[in-house]
Image (cartoon, rainbow, N blue to C red; front, side):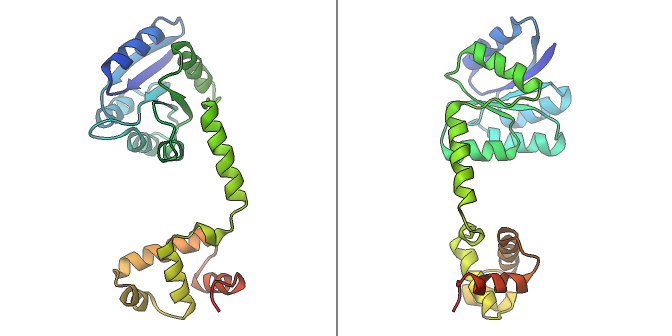
Length: 210
């Protein structure tokens, strides 16, 4: 029996989908929550096989709830069930740890099949989501590391190339020293280098500075 917890702030959606799932011989809905905060606590208490997660909810949205669950229980299998297909929802939800991504317009039978597939370790993504992920992968493959830098991170890198210390960079950009350190850390990570010297070498090698 596949045990499921359903987290969604729309009562009628919960009732409809939960009723259909509970009628399946191999699925049991063992808990429901109407917001992310309560849902996290419920999931960590019940440890279900599958979590059905809405994204837009009061108190705590589904993306944050997913991240918190995965942080404390990395093995959790979470299926997003939402009305949204925009990039601001799809990528963060999957990056937070969701395994599958379904739409509320999907048939109840499709959601049931997604529960079974996800339970057996097979992610299920709406065709539109698959298309978005493939496009992002192609874009990422054709993108140079420094193209991932934000405008502020690029400013910090150029000042690093001028030999300025973190404090001097903070003074020049009128930002906190702690903020500069965060930017430097992000720069090293995005450029895939080990230290400031390598970052500066990268900048010169790619003609980011004259």
